[in-house]
Amino acid sequence: MSVVVIANPKGGVGKTTLATQVAGYFASRGHSVMLGDSDRQQSSLLWLGLRPAAARPVSTWEVTVDLVKPPRGTTHVVLDTPGGLHGKRLKDVTRLANKIIVPLQPSVFDIFATRTFLDQLAEQRNAGKIEVGIVGMRVDARTIAADKLREFVETLGLPVLGYLRDTQNYIHLAARGLTLFDVAPGRVEKDLEQWQGICSWLRQ
Image (tube, rainbow, N blue to C red):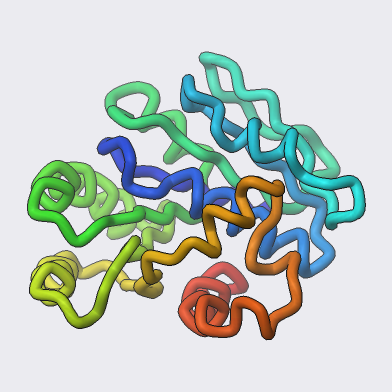
């Protein structure tokens, strides 16, 4: 079973956007997918409730206070996590995960708030327990902020899976319970190109 956790202790960095897109990607490849949501806002579960019956199925993983292994029969699990993830909860998550994706925005506040968390994950990665990857969120490649983000991630020793632009496509699709992988590729061609590195890493 593949368990992918989307985590960053800072709120509002795009965890749910990534979690739903990853679940949609796995579903598009015919996998048996469950999406769990341990955030109190339950945004991922809201998205699931909006997902049309005609779309490739993504099941709900009921996440309790104490994380337990997902049900048998599921091949791919995606877990959306809350802001402030640390301590026992973080240990529980890393115990379950095969891969962790950390979304990071090009903001000095986001970078500093995430640094300690990334160091902790790097220790887990170096111990051979889990794979950790970074995804830049809402990145405009032409800005100084984007340059600063690249400079920062180069110091981490962690792979950068991709940089995703700030686009209304994610917002419009989420409102319908859909992902980039549920619509005609021509409609979201530029965004799918930015996902190639992420998808390749997820397949490994």
